[in-house]
Amino acid sequence: MKVISKESQISVNELKEMAQKMFGNLVKAVVDTKNEIMAVDAELHADQEALLIEKGSKQENLWGINLYPDLEGSDFIEFDSMINLRPSQNNRSRSVENPETQKTIIKIVNKLVTK
Image (cartoon, rainbow, N blue to C red; front, side, top):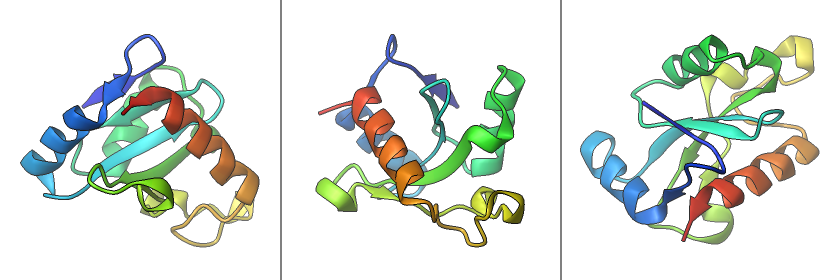
């Protein structure tokens, strides 16, 4: 697992290498919308979530996504993870249901991933 910040960005090519080693076409990631960091390169979103919490993130700011490094535009990010099931935050599915939260995640990912 690796934590990505604006000081330690990650390239699409690095994501492609990670994808090949794990799932073939995707990299699981967890984004901290408050601290603007992201954990990548793990089999489970829950492991990335635990790592970020250990580093001081709060669970309510963490959202699981999948990155598809071979795709572009809106196909690059998929908002799908079991950690997103949060009835207490009015998120009742594996997706990220709040459009503003989605926009924030996209903005952060675009800062952290270099093309």
